[in-house]
Image (tube, rainbow, N blue to C red):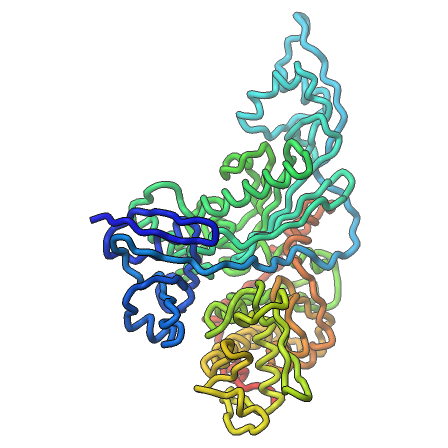
Amino acid sequence: MNVQIYVHTQNERLTFSCEEGEAVSSLLRENGLLALPCGVGKCGKCLIYASTKPCTEEINLLGSEKIAQGLRLACYTKAKENLEITIPGRNELEVLTQYSAMDYVFDPFIKRRKVTVAEPTLDDQRPDLQRVLDALSLDAYFLNFSKLKRLPYALRADEFNYAAVENSCFINWGKDENSYGLVIDIGTTTVAVCLINTTTGEILASVGEQNAQAPYGADVISRIRSEMEWQSNGCKGENPLFHAITSQIDRLLQQLLHKHNLEDVDFIVFTGNTTMMHMLCGIPGEFISKAPFIPVLQNAQRLHAEELGIHSQAVCYLMPCISSYIGADIVASLLAANAHHPQEPFILIDLGTNAEIVLSYKNKFLSCSAAAGPCFEGATLSCGMAGQKGAIAEVCSDDEKGFTCTTIGEGEAKGICGSGVLDILALLLDKGIVDETGRLEENVPEFAKYMHDDSFYLTDKVYFSQKDIREVQLAKSAVRAGIEILLKEASLSFADINKLYLAGGFGSALRKESAVRIGLIPQELGDKVHVLGNGASFGALRYVTEAHVQEGVKELIQKMQYIELSSHAGFSDAYIENMIFPV
């Protein structure tokens, strides 16, 4: 039997109809109202307010104080007639859109050319398209049917002043002499978009948002699981994860075009991890999540924006991936690190739920993906949260209080994001509150007032628990083991490494001193750290604006060897050895 429930957001009261007794989590997710970080009712972060009787799982995950405040979990809240639900206020994520640029020759492979097309006559009855190609001295074109339908009218309405040419291929036209493009980095957590005038090289805008797929899970595995649920239900309606991301990109594009008074862009270049690239195209990611971890495709793709449901005449370029867990974002970050040109040995790390690691040496590349878990992004920690307003992002030692905290937005602390997690753990190690095995000590007099129930309280409500320490311990151990396995395979030592590149939002936000203190970054490499910022976006930009770079990417991938850590003989020993924190 269907019942009506009411959902209160910050701006409105919504009415929904759903099956009585069903968990409200799916309804809230499908309407983009709530994220389900784990998707299976284990993380305790799908918070809502509801006057329902809490179940045992909610009591265990939330505790008596939050239950008394009226907080419940969407995964366990069942629909009933006239149920009233309130969604807690959501803050905007801090999205990294800037990057550390390197000099290179800016030579976009898409350019606009002034063109005059001969008018047809009874003596010259060449087709419109052929007359355009002849005027450009080209043989190839890449136009979809909707574009072809407009061609005869554009030619006869004086709209055909400039032609957009991709190398030797006709792809677009317009009145503007400038060519514009969109660079999009689809992260699991965030989406970063950059609008660029490729004729002048000017970056017109950089914007970012939380990935619209977030309601379907905090990581790629939970999102694949959500996609599989849709498939098991008979694929009713449009693929929700495909629709979420393509609709978001379409909306951002239209907003940028309107703001800058542009008709359209000539191209869109995409980068992201392998799962995000699959979901962008509506391609099933199921077998990425199962051994032997096989993607449907990993080569570069070229298609029209309309094929992705994006309202644009642009040509889309999808950067290639390396494996199921080394995606196009890592290829782009390698471009940002100049990896397609000879240089001294370096390591590149993108820290996230999966920490992708690449070692470059002697014109070769080794790569692996370490399952760090979502603790660096806050998803599985007691008070963990993404990098948004209210998150503790920095913790420093203080002579009077013992420590001080800095929050994003400088308001009341609501939780801890990844950089703050490394800082607090480093502080606890320095003060002897956590020993080398990761055990939380309670007999340090100076800090005893901050200790309660196997947790260290940074504020009255925000704490870092023994369980959280173990989560970080497991994650840092996996990353360090991955680094050491690659070095061992290459017969190299830390001393042989010239640079350690950190890519992505977390890598850019962390303090290297804290990362070294907890053993996430080897001490020998602490002074060799170079932050790329949003290296994926910068690399994607180079992919379409640097001469011969696409050939360079093909060579780079051909030289890449991927090592599956789960089946590597030395990984278990390296993982166990790195569980210990530096003394």
